[in-house]
Length: 79
Image (cartoon, rainbow, N blue to C red):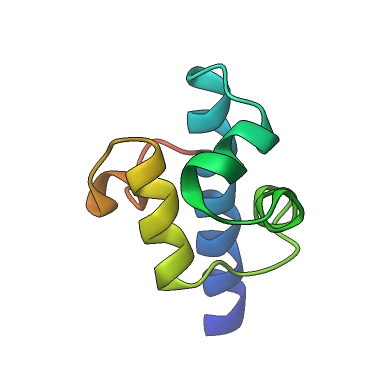
């Protein structure tokens, strides 16, 4: 049962990344440039095809100019 909970958490973090990107009117390519991650990686993270690493999350948070804790705060994200 713990696996399902983790899967849900991962999906919410991935969705939050997509929502934050869209809120800032950034394309995946622009976020890729700002974060130093590939456009392919950004797409896979947003679609929750891969679980982002801590390092990737930190790069994305920096690209959004937000604290890491803010990025992973999924209390208001609903699937």
